[in-house]
Image 1 (cartoon, one colour):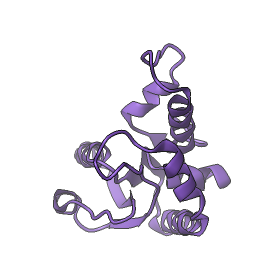
Image 2 (cartoon, rainbow, N blue to C red; image 1 turned 180 degrees about the horizontal axis):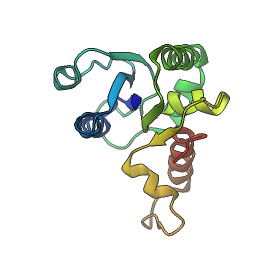
Image 3 (cartoon, helix red, strand yellow; image 1 turned 45 degrees about the vertical axis):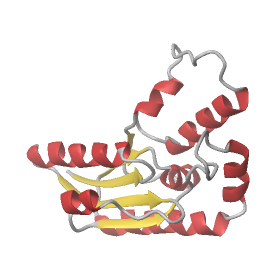
Image 4 (cartoon, one colour; image 1 turned 120 degrees about the vertical axis):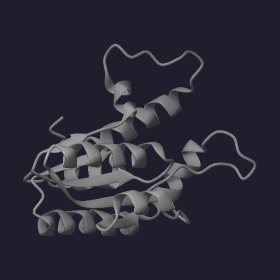
Length: 171
């Protein structure tokens, strides 16, 4: 079976999950026909990713959290407005994902928590199954309880974002 990966590039967790998944799939006789990594402003791909995944890695613009210069918590409201003012940037990513999927011959997509991929699939259901991988999907489980003291806006934003990444997913 042929797979196309879409991967959120912020942080390293989703990237390493993609590497491990590719290795497992290839050991089982499957093929990964491409790895599309969403990257935020100013972000470059880590060398280990390109070394481990080789050819077939491509990037597109994707939202990322904005943080204060001195560190600290993500600025949720600022992040929302920053990205809401740049729809053309993400529309290009949606188009890129759709074109790449159509040309790749992929029989399934595995989305590692990438929001632009979720948006692409929300706007037009792909003809192949989409599977989502990421520990954040635990937030959508009905039994999951968020810790006390969380700001309601933070929790609602996180749930919205997580649902976006999994829009129209098969599983």
